[in-house]
Image (cartoon, rainbow, N blue to C red):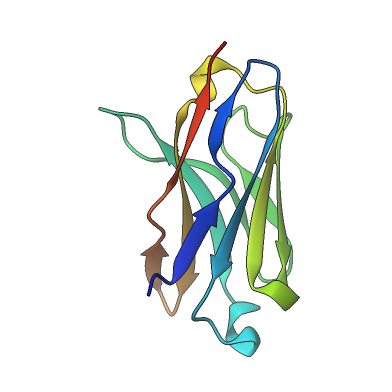
Length: 118
């Protein structure tokens, strides 16, 4: 059973919006709330890049150029983080990955494909 399960990807037209979700399916609620969670994205031939992260206290950090269109949030009661993406353009096309950092170790989901195209 996968631990981090992403969903919400798909095909969207330029200017559109998507909301991604990531559920930490095997996390215990009392520990999930301690984790720093993040979204990364990757396109073929490029390194994975930070989209946004959120700490246990709710402090957010965004990758370059991401803050004006993307919003990361967490719902601890559902062991879930989300990424609201607005005003999408073709350069946002990528596989989006969820990452959990706990005990100094990073755990990754399998990713969800986002394609922005007309």
